[in-house]
Length: 411
Image (cartoon, rainbow, N blue to C red; front, side):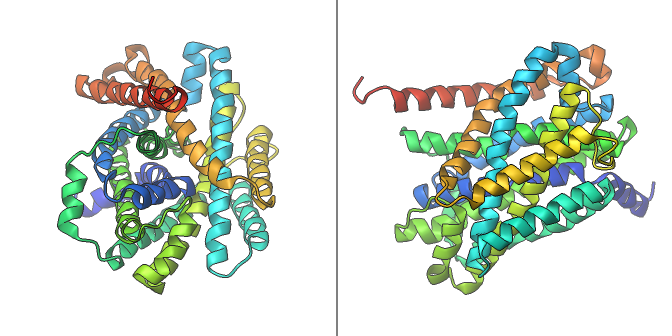
């Protein structure tokens, strides 16, 4: 196969891995990274390296299941573990995804207000636009638009460069671990893991691979798609933390959401950095508001055995389309309520995703190691070490957070 044919072959398979990983940097994720940089400077940068390794391993594992089985993760969980356990997991994931979608619309509202547009116009228009795109468009059209929009994430790289950090110090802190044994530091560590490796992205990645029809003969290209996507998403996260650490942390400015970071950047890094940060947040929020409700509709319909897919019509897949519609409408309406606790919902959704992730991974790891399902494509020993290590780490951090938060000081 010539170099050009290889490139064309990869382009035909490319999409699910890059889109899933990049849109994981939605409003909730950007908020988490911004708050981490503003409150702890470069102190949490080191967490991105092990998180990226874990993300690549887990996403490749999920993609491999989609390629080999041609089924979504919910399908496999229901078939192998029964409807009851699947149902309760779907309820918990729906709540977490609703919070994530609310945070995406909140991010859209906040970023557009910085750019001069009221949320009472931005949110309804954004909700209508993405609803029309998914319910009236095809999978191919949606994928092409999402891939193009992923390019706008590099606005955060530009903001990071404009902030003029001290790069030797940045790279040193990125590779040298720094631990702080307090509840806020652990809370944000869980949030970083929970917003980088989310439960919904496992379901969406496998479902999108199944819907696109990627098969075993496309495995190597699909694997490359995943690796590129995972690498890009954490490079973006790196620059968001660097931007906020260089400007806000150094100036002693504490923030609670990403839009505050964009606003605060103006006097510290200039108008261009602030505008680029705000536009990138709006883009990320819209993309998240498309994908997270889609993931929700995919996994619920798979779990219940209903028809699903972007290529389906309302008549062909009514449950899929209605779940998508209801998630968007409810989330958008919640954002429009005056004085709604949006910041709490945004960070809470990231932490809740971190808490739910071990349960999703336990199912995924057991399925990918089932030779009756995967044949010769079961996990290698090293993959199992990393994936099980991720589960154990999240559980340990969560227990520590609960102990330090709930137990009185001094006990």
